Length: 275
Image (cartoon, rainbow, N blue to C red; front, side, top):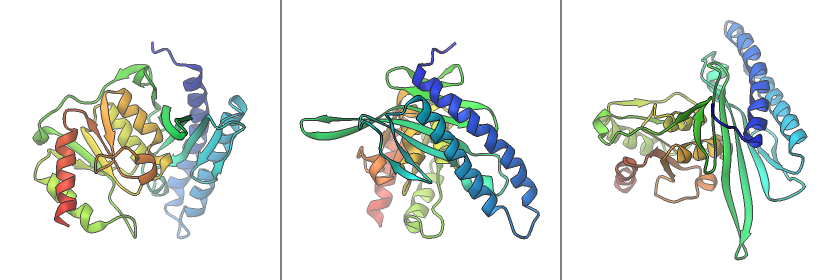
């Protein structure tokens, strides 16, 4: 059995408690699909309720930590060394439509000053899928796990046998033409493309070897914080699409097993260059 640190246990307890509430609310959402009013307001309440619960649970056991949350924004802590980065419901559109694919994501960011410069690093994270009762978790230097089982990124090298995931831009988010070019380039090279609607779970699935790679842009820190350390601790590589390392600031992310990362990055670069 995997030996979970107190920090991981704190996150898992909070996520499981919030997850039980989301599952109850999800059952109600499925019934609301038949109404003309729709479940929009109900889902918003479920989202906020889960965030309040997570905030209260995490604050109680780590009162000095700060918070960055999807719904409530930033709440400074008593010290600047650590903060929680929380998404109470990643996959809201799935939830809204009664699609059972969503999760809770919690990351821990450590901050320090080196040479007069502030540095930030994700040192622990958890992605909890309440529908399947699956907890993906990782801590710096300790590896990545699914429940009590150690996980690793895939070992594939051949693009023709790989499955790659992404998030399709909708409405006014990101550059549609560029994403279409990227998708078309991968369609000719890979065994499958997937779009399941939860970036946090997409990253967890890369860590578990289910996907060989994942790319997306215009994401928020709470979408990717936990996923970044999951992939890294599972032996994978995470960068921006252009190879940079400021994913949390830019919202651009490419995650994959380390053997395929350069190939995927080259394809994405060419699509941008062709624009």
